[in-house]
Length: 229
Image (tube, rainbow, N blue to C red):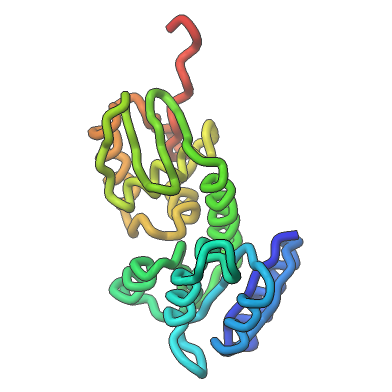
């Protein structure tokens, strides 16, 4: 069973998140301070971490950095997906958390369906990382090294462009809406029409026919051509 650690000192938010995890049939453990949360991470493995930023004994980003600096092969796993759940909505705060290693960022008051969608994306991303390279229509995408090759040549993508591409690859051939892409990227790709901008850049760098527009829905990866075509 998927095990999630909630680090949240507000009882109402913690109860809401725990109820969401039970609905998804995931197991959870709740701590309201950094110290006990770190001891829990050191004692047993977790598949995901939901982390508030403002906690009684410090900043959530301190725990985030300790996780990311952990020794591979020991607990906690430095690659544990971390989703920030915070009332701080400033762009600079969100970007700083992502730069420090957070995999996603959701602002309070939380929308439970959004939290669930982002968590499913992060857990799916972990499976993708374990599986290794994704090959599609002449592209070779390595989620671990975050590199993309087209016809053997390296293509430089921004972090946001890579996040959009990976979201589409993971759900192929299913089309994704802009909101789907936002959720599956951990809300990393920006607001407003940012998804359209990133898709435009991806088409310019990877080829116009790599990503298809699905009218009334959003975007999807173009299917592999039939043999002989």
